[in-house]
Length: 156
View 1 (tube, rainbow, N blue to C red):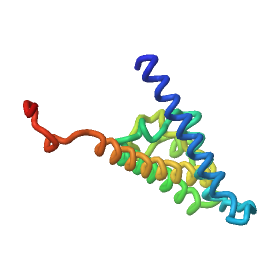
View 2: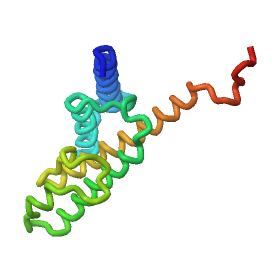
View 3: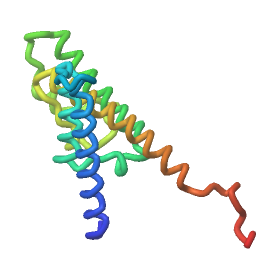
């Protein structure tokens, strides 16, 4: 990856974080100017998505075309959280936590579960949000790319 590509990715990630923070702020005030408390779950998911962008560098532009992988990763974290909640206070072995499920779409090192099921739910929600953003980014890219029907080569 060249310096220009890295700089563009950083700018895209920063722009995405700013957009999310502004969106969060714009939905935190009612029409009378009074603050609205976000539900804890929505706040946790938004905070995790912002963390993924700022810390990990994952923004919609880079995720375009990877919406299936993002949805699979979301499912894996949600499934782990459900298992953790089902068994309650029974600790899940580190081996189970450290081994991604077979449906995990990425490398083992990318699997970063938390012993807290609430954190895993936040990760699942943020990955689902990323999948939605990636779908929109993919659709936008497809609209920007000329199709072969829009003109044939040699039709000058």
